[in-house]
Image: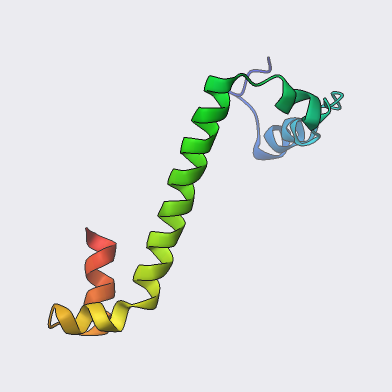
Length: 87
């Protein structure tokens, strides 16, 4: 591992070039990998996928109803958006 204590910026950047190339490892067939999952792993995957989907649904429903939410809470639309950023 190179020592970075007394390196110039140019020397440091030159050592970074070699780390940009991804390793050329052989990738396995994804179908084979999916067949290796047991029932518990599939259930974990499905629960995570359902949570991710629900989070996306929640995000877009709030985004599409900002004006109605602002009217309900008696604040401006801008105020509603800044409240969601800070909370």
